[in-house]
Amino acid sequence: MTVNILSLDQLCVARAGTRIITDVSADMPCGAIVGICGPNGAGKSTLLAAIANVIPCCDGTIQWQDRRLTPSDFSFMPQTLGIRAKLSVLEIVLLGRLDRLRWTLTTDDIDAAGEALELVGMKDLGARPIGTLSGGQQQLVLLAQRLIRRPPILLLDEPTSALDLRRQLVVLDILKAYAKTKNALIVIALHDLTLAARYCDQLLLLQEGKLACSGKPASVLTRETIGTVYGVDAEILATSNGTPVIAPLAPAYRTPR
Ligand SMILES: Nc1ncnc2c1ncn2[C@@H]1O[C@H](COP(=O)(O)OP(=O)(O)OP(=O)(O)O)[C@@H](O)[C@H]1O
Image 1 (cartoon, rainbow, N blue to C red):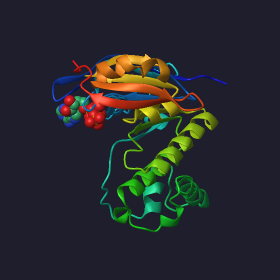
Image 2 (image 1 turned 135 degrees about the vertical axis):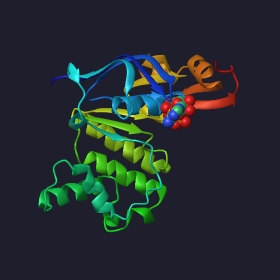
Image 3 (image 1 turned 135 degrees about the horizontal axis):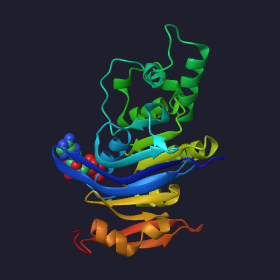
């Protein structure tokens, strides 16, 4: 199987004239979930938006299969909640196929939207106006909208932030299966370090726009790194199957720089 790689090389991004991301380099292979973690304001959303070409990079390169990334390569889901559009859930999901929709909807379009909604457990709400759904339900619908395109790369900014405990696991299981079956790359910003440890194959830990550490979750999420980057003393425990569990004990173990 071909291993396509999304390569960031010395990426720098500025917003409103201020450097936000500095010299971030990473190789992210297809078939993997890559987590972007870090404190509030570390630059997770900015990095994802820059990869999605929503914000221009001021330096560095982004390459996919040794060429520039194009819009057909990925779906990007920014942090958006509280949608007010007067569209139904089904219509919102179909918008994910906007690039291939014709004047009439095909059975394939409707079936694909139905399947995507079923996958995230929202099929029964297809006729509901999106604005009448809860924040978590909207988040699931927006994920279905991104999945319907079946992109080789999914860029997701905190897609589980509004979800309950079970749905967080369901969504991350869906993404894990998607990465494996479609040989797709999923790049996901996550605050929950235990979920990141459990589901991500690789982590990029950002601190003030720079890569503090990267690699496999167990090597990134150490007591020392969490203390330095988050300013939190945390114990690293393990589940019965060896997955790391990050148990925060107290803030200000060491004040972050
Ligand atoms: N539109 C903007 N104009 C100027 N600065 C911005 C803009 N958006 C974000 N920033 C700044 O960029 C920095 C990184 O923000 P970003 O949203 O990428 O962080 P984040 O890691 O995603 O944070 P959070 O965990 O709170 O979502 C912050 O200092 C923020 O204030």
